[in-house]
Amino acid sequence: MSTITFDTFRFVETLEKAGMPREQAAAFSQAQQFSLSEALDSNVATKADLISAKSELKADLLAVKTELKTEMAEIRADLHELELRLTIKLGTFIAVAVASTAALVKLL
Image (cartoon, rainbow, N blue to C red):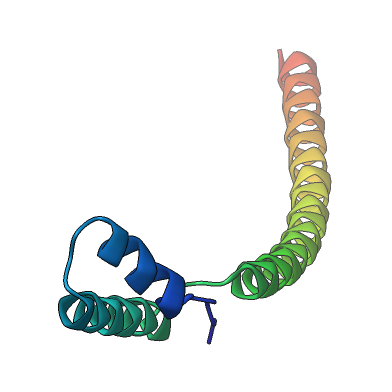
């Protein structure tokens, strides 16, 4: 919760100098002070709140970044495994094609 310094005496004095009766100026001053108090008691973020939120966001982003790096490493490993399997299958396919071609050449 924030606090604000509000000089009610000075506020009343200023209003009196402008021609407002003292009672009315005092009532207006109290109303103004109440309004400011209500505004500050509502959900207004303070500088400390913003600094705290910033720290939390940085921590969350760091956690997400770490998680993404881990997932990327897993995806790279999976892609490497798929690449090896594809290489083996392609090599097998080529070997079968060469063997089939050699067998056909011998038969003809």
